[in-house]
Structures are given as C-alpha cells and as structure tokens.
Length: 584
Figure 1: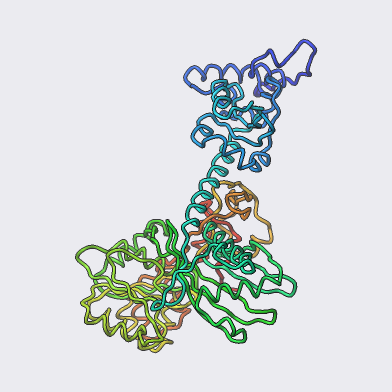
Figure 2 (figure 1 turned 90 degrees about the horizontal axis):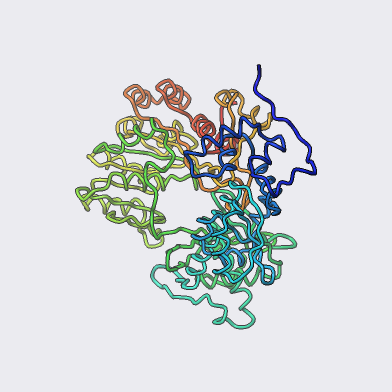
C-alpha cells in the first residue's frame, strides 16, 4: 500500500476556521493528513516551535500555505515578498531593529494613527502590546512568510544602518585638493558655494556619496548626444546611477577640475589630477582622468580606499590545494613570485595579502608602487613619482642600500626594472611583482619578451599565478536554476562537471541592486616551477609547451577553477564565461 493521501474537503457551513486550530484547518483543507498532524504533534513535545513552523520544517506544507491558513483562522491579510521589500523606511525606523527582529515584526506603512505591520506570528500578543506602547500607534497586522520576513528584516534594517553610516561619514567629509606638495582643504558644502554653483556642488557631492555607499571603485561621467551618463563600477561591472541633462556637463567637469587643481580653461587636451576625500571612517584617494570626446569632456575618477586592508590569504578564494602551494612558495627565503592579469583583476590585493601573511618583526619588507593602494602597518611603502625622477628603477637602486629581506615591486614594466628584480631574488631576497599577461604560461614568456634571459627566469622564478575576479552570487537572493542551453554550449567540454547538477544564481534584490551579485572572489591558475619546467624555460620552450607540461603536472586552468566555484554555488556560469577564455 502506498502512503495515505490527504482527503480534499470542501468548506462546509458547520466548519468555521476562526474556531479551529491550525492543524485542524490544514487537515480540513487537505494540505496534510491526520497521520501527518499526529506525528508533528508528537514531535512538538520536544520543541518550543509552534505547530505551523514544525509542519513547514518537516516539508508537509509550504510557508505560503501556512500564511494562508493563518489568514483563514485569524482573519488577517497575507503580505507578499515584494510588499515586504517595498516597506516605507520612515515607518520601519519607528520600530528599533532589536525589537523588530526579536518579535519578527516589520513596519510597512504609517496610516494616520495606525501602523501597518507584517508579522510571522500574529498571535504574539506580548509583541503587539509592546509595539502599541512603543509607537503610540494602533498596529494593523498582516501575516508574512517566515523566510521572506527574515530576508526583508535583514535587508531593510541593513540599508538603514548603511544609510546612517554614510550620512554620518558624509557630514564630516573633507576634500584635500591638489598634489602631494600643494594640498588644500576644500569645503564641499553647498552653502559655501555661490547660488549659481550650488546645484553643481550638490550634484558632485551626490555622485561621490553614492559611489562611496555602493563600494564603487570607479566613477565615469560620460557625455552623450542628449544626456550625460553617470556610471559607477561595482564588483567590476559598470552600472548607471543617474543621467543628468547635457547642460550640467560643463559645471560638473569644471567643479571636478577645481578639486583636482587642473586647468579649467583647457578643454582640448587630456588632463590627469587627483584629490583626496577624508571622512570619519574612510580615507579615499581619488585619481582623476579627463579626456576630450566628440560630445564633450569625459571624466573618470578612480577611488582608492587607503584607510585599511581587511583581506587575508584565506579570503581571496584559493581552493585548498592551491592555498597550500601558494603559502609554501611565499614562505621561501628567496626567489620571485609573479602575479599576472589585466587591470582590476585583484593582483595588488593578492600581493598585499601575501605580505600580510608573512610579515613579522624579524623581516624588513619594502614596497615600490604606483600608486600605493593600501597602507599596511609595519611595511615600508614607497610611491613612485616619474615627474621628479622617482621611478621604479631609481627607487629600487636606493632600496638595495636599505637592507631589505622582502620586496614588492608594483609592476615590472621594462627590462631595467626586471633586471634589478632578478638580481634581488638571486642575492637572497624574496621578490613579489606583477606583469600584464593573459595566463600563467604567458607570464613566463612575457618576462622573456621584456628582455630577461631564459636562464635568469628559469633560475629565479618560484611561482607564477594568473588571476581574475568573478562576482559572488548574492547570499540574500540565492536560488536554484537551470542554465540556458546556449550558455552550456558556449562552455563546450568545460561544462562536463556541471551536467546533472543543480546550479545557483541570484534572482536580484535590493541588497545587490537587483544584479544577483554582491562582492567578488578570485579564480586562479598557478604554476609552481618544477625542475622539468625550469629546464623547459632554460631551453626557451614555447608558451604552449609550458602550459601543456603545467597541466600534466596538475595545474588547474582559470576556466576550470571558475567551474569549480560554479559547482560550489559561489558564482555563475555567465561570470566564468565573462572572465575567462578557452582554446577554440
């Protein structure tokens, strides 16, 4: 005999749900059987949860079915997830976060002397009475699904906290204008500007505030034929935040030029400048680049948060096997560790995390960078300045006399810098640096292209690593999905590990600006230099041969490492396709 099937009953005149228990209503509605109810009632003896919660947890009913039954029993209306996430922030602020989360109550809207609230358990009379006393308003109760209510409480109160932090930070915002030698503090307050300039000052402030609030790394102000697009780069992807009218472009560019100490009269040539932003919580260096286009001057501002570095080697995204290889290599007393990838691929972050991992009071660590992106305690950091002759090469020669143990060179751009770096590593120093290359194998050939001899590269390089950054799936709106057939076909044979598996993506929510992503994580490709690989470099082997040998020795490619993270539910197939290439 098969399992007992629930009997579907029609509502009778004698059955009044307002006088019945939740379990009885569910049985009457045919959602569960008497047997299901008895089993759950038996398990309730060892639990403090209500019967409805236990039935949901056991999989007998869905949250929506529970909400529907509450509505039948108590006469309260049900509220949808969209209505929860669209709650009025001013109403939400009427209930303290701790109280709201403890009693599972979210204010949706204030309506005269009433406060419309969503609750998981409308029978929480103590919470309702406390709410009346706290707000002096009469609660109008709606019933909400538990998981949707949890997400909404976390999301909306999180935004309120973030908004408060941003407002507090912006209140104390100070702009340090100009270059290193001629710095001047500029007041951003509109009341310090003329009545004609005040709207532009407010607009520049708003753009900067939004970028800081959303963790942006870049701001683009782009003139179009009929408008101006303002975009910010969040997690590596540009997103439009506003489109002010074309008439505002001249004022925007002029204001930014004034902050950056640039020539406001010159509109035909490109210009580069900088200014700083200091708040109570952040110290941000803003690098400004202005480029004339057919529709006017385009402005790009790069935001470098210099207030602190909170990454470590374990949080970058290494797989366990890669982590052990990388940590073993950076613990060596000498040699070179090379990291490659395009601009914005997280190379500097990986190198800083490496230094943070190995620094101690017994070592002298010095860096030469352009620019210094993060300030690290206990490490000597030098920022190059080509205008005064403080180049990578000249600085490195001086550092030779500074008795260093470990050296970080921001980027190897030419043969002279590369030659000095190699000499450092061959004389008992550990050297970290970066080059622009597409993958780990091409990193080796890139060093040869710069002008280094094969025997030097083969002798001093201990590890080469290529990396990219992919966006993380938003934890707040994760859901399982089936990828498009076309997307899987684009992966080709790389899709084999995904076949038959349930994949995850983000459906989009307020927490992630409806992108489905929040934050980024690295994908990596490591080549630890074995004796065979060193010999191949000595013999000037081709990039393809080096790559084939590395795979034979166990190297995981960027594409394969990305697929691993798709399987683990960390990122999506689309992100891996966007960030990596494969052989055709």
